[in-house]
Amino acid sequence: MFQGDHWYYNIRINDYQLITIAWNLGLILVPWFFGWVIIMLYRRTGLATWWAKIFGLVLFLFWLLFIPNAIYVVSDVRHLANYCEVANKFSVCEQNVWMILFFYVYATIGWVSFVYIVNQLKNFIADVYGQLLAEVWCVLLMPFVSLGFLLGLVQRWNSWEAFMYPLNLKADIVSYTNDVHRFTNWLIFTIFLYILYWSGNVIFRPRNS
Image (tube, rainbow, N blue to C red; front, side):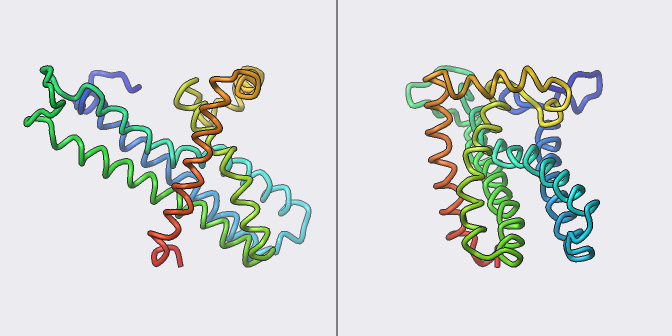
């Protein structure tokens, strides 16, 4: 992903650049920031003016574009594949076994962050519009997040490229409705995203209150 002559570009774990970790963790903070600004905007203006409503809508659209980056971190456990330099019938290498916990902890950060960031706006919606609408919002949100995740992982889209190549993005989005393999991936990942979110709410409840 990152290219250059600096030494930190060459620090890798199983061909995974460590600088990418800093980049991905930084991207996690972006939707949290937009969510925080939305809440502050409402507290100060009540979204009573037309400019506040438009600004709030723009902020929410940016939040939607960047929220898939939080759960995307979970997918980086795939870099465990072939972590043994020499073939081993038990697929365990003593010199690299620490990678298992490394990528597990890294993925867990994405899971916890995703639950927290979704709940940041969910709690705001519940306070303003009621708990029922907040729950419905979460149900409708997950297919969008899973689609954004797949577009980033498989088609290699970045969030900001939605403004640069909207027609290309539209074509890839449509492909997830008319290609059976892509639709299956989208459906299954959405189901597991519900599981991750609702189980995370149970496990991390004290942190979300």
